[in-house]
Amino acid sequence: MFRGLINDAKSAAGSLLAKYLARASVAVPFVIALGFATAAITIMLVDRFGAITAYWIVAFGFTVVGLLATLIVTVKEQDEETIEKQVESQDTASVAADAAAQAAVQAPMALLGALLATPFGPNVLAGGAKMVARNIPLVVLLTLVAFLFWPSEPVADGDEPEVEVAPAKPNGLHASAANGLHREAA
View 1 (cartoon, rainbow, N blue to C red):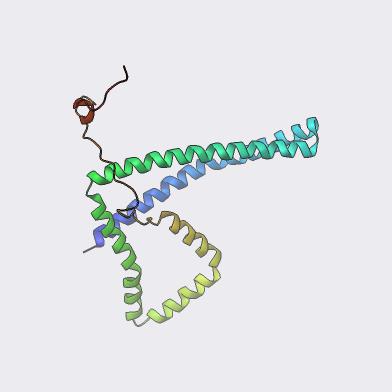
View 2: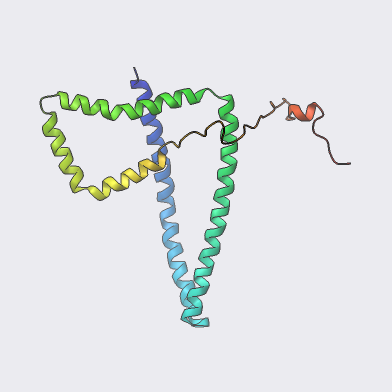
C-alpha cells in the first residue's frame, strides 16, 4: 500500500543527497585553494606587521566573513519561510508529506518485525549489531546527517499570526492594489 510512497521518498532523498554531494565535490578544490590563499596572506601579513598583529588581522577577516555569511543565510531563510507559508496555505501536498513521514517512521519497526519473524533473523540481527558497534563513528555521522534532513515540528496555530495573501491578477497586480487598498504617497 505504501510501497509507491516509500519508493518516491527514497528517490527524492537519493536525488537530494546526490545534488548536495555534487555541490560538495565541486566546492572541495575551492576550499583547498582558500586554505592555501589564507596561508599565503598570513605569511605576507607576518612579514609586514609581525606575527601577533598578522594573526589578529586574519582572525578579524574571518570574523567579518562569518558575520556576512550568517546575515545572508538568515535573510535567505526568512524569505524561504515566508514563501513556504504562502505556498503551504494554498497547497494540499502537506497531506502527502505527512503520510510519507508516517510511513518512514513506521517502516523501520515493520522491517525489524519481519526480520525477527524469519528463522535466521536473530543471527542476522546480532551480526548487524556487531557491525554497527565496530563502525560507531560512521553511525554517529549518519545519524547527525539524518537529523539535518528530519522534518521540524509544525508551528502551532497560536504561535504566529497567519498572513493572508491576496490572489495575483494576470497582469501582475495584487487584488489589494486593484481594490484601491494600496495608495501611493502624494
